[in-house]
Image (cartoon, rainbow, N blue to C red; front, side):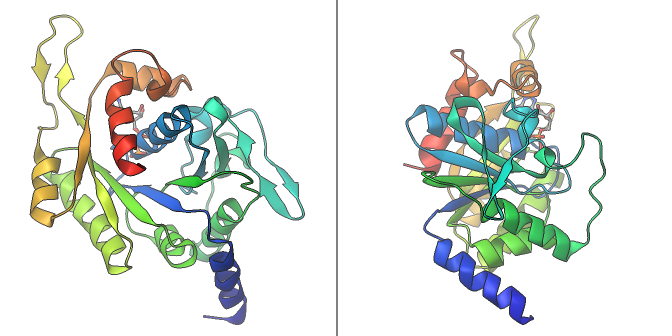
Length: 259
Ligand code: ADP
């Protein structure tokens, strides 16, 4: 490690009164970004001052999910100022800094430095940062863990075995680095047919809770596979902020993540 990195780490640890909760998954497409957004929204609605760092450097989706993809963050004293999005949630994301559709093709060190720009920003009165992690166990995850030291990690998985195998890898990465696992969330279990109401389980059900028991970590809750979640999320209206049934599972999980 060269001197520059050591200085950065020292600076980061001085700044580190602002706790970070990492929301992570072993693979993409399991609902990690959706969960990160909705935990933040539920906490914001409960009166907490939360921000989101979109650590998914190569595939940022938080600007869309939080309905604020039109605004670019400003810089003050060479540091970024988070954009205030839905429910007063501050956001910093690569998606705000590159053109829509532009490929982000960086090697690990550049991505790690980009992450530091997002984390080490003017977070002001923010009391908790939710980090939407990239999927898997790569360079950006290591940068987050080593430089920015999350206080805990929430791991989301769909219930089928293939996703769970990767989720276990993500858990191992955090545990080996000394980051406590706050718990596991099962997403996309139990699809209620909008026509007949019959519940089916395209990806199985209960697998994540069983895995949590086996590994010895908390099970934080289950979010059903629902057209409403997908439509609200893609429309930039996080379901945790709605007045219908979609909000409750997210609010329950958020309450277990940050009491
Ligand atoms: P990841 O961050 O793990 O790649 P996303 O949060 O981006 O996953 O979710 C992938 C897609 O699945 C998105 O279109 C999202 O709206 C959808 N999705 C996530 N969770 C659910 C759910 N519980 N029900 C329906 N669609 C969901």
